[in-house]
Length: 121
Image: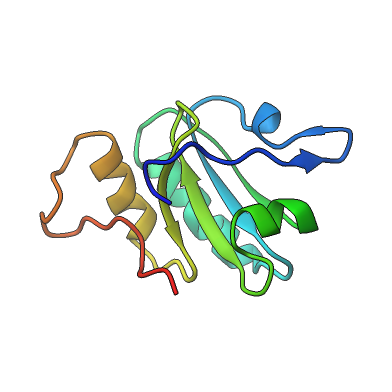
């Protein structure tokens, strides 16, 4: 959940958190993630002007289970300190930018255009 430390999971010969790199990172858990959706969130990360790493699909069953995406895909925005900034089942244009603004202190909760992630069913 947002604010919690991002769970680690085995990924190939290593571990998920070891592969995150620096900056804000987007992780899309589940199979069949659309390339246009990956491109949309990557563009929002880049446009933020904040230190940002990659946007990566993660299909590992173990990782998907740990992130609550074993049955439905989920997108997580992870802060540079390894904590979850926001999470969504469905990401719309502007969601990631709003969450980045909130996480970086550029906007306050409740300001127009900010989000913390859609309700989590």
